[in-house]
Image (cartoon, rainbow, N blue to C red; front, side, top):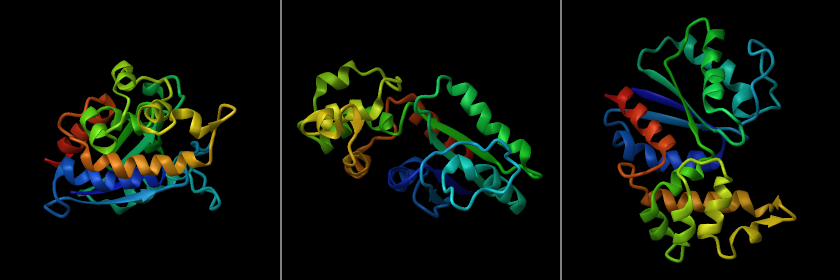
Amino acid sequence: MHFEILVEGQSELTALSILMSKIIGEYSNPHTWKIHKHRGIGKIADNPTALPNKNDQTLLHNLPSKLRAYGAENNPNLVVVVLVDLDDKDDCVIFKNELVALLNYCDKKPRSLFCIAIEELEAWYLGDSDALKLAYPDMKQAILDAYVQDSQIGTWEILAEIVHAGGLNVLTTNGKRSPLVLQEKANWTKNICPHLNVEQNQSPSFRYFRDRLRRIAI
């Protein structure tokens, strides 16, 4: 099976480049994959049948046309995997249904898997206390212990409080993100993902991603 994986940006690309072999085995033995990063999540166009704006490289804006293109390949060994953050959306089920509905705009529907990190990809890192300790020995365990897995309470902010020297205050100015945040998110991904135990991770959205991939890869 070959997986075409569509993600929001560099952190997701880095994370899955590390995690895919942990989930479904060594590359090309027998499965293969290619991960495509975008410039953020964006939003679904009002008219999903329209050609995408070439100046908009966000994932959701381009998703309808990409699904149509993959479907046109008519390849039974191809699976399209879409991984996005829930962010501040109120209802995961409604968002998931909106993504699945885009297949209705395809002449031929590609086999697809839509996965949502709740609330953000950093929830997957918070699902493995041991990985956090290995990457950041001075992490604040008490804050992690108070965190409810996959809760929508500001996931990256919680991770910053747990592992970043100086906590969230160093990464915000007057309540707004510092330009340093994207770099720190990239650092967290590179430092934590190699230690993640995919079998023991407690994040429900990670476990869904893992289990659905494995079910397809049988």
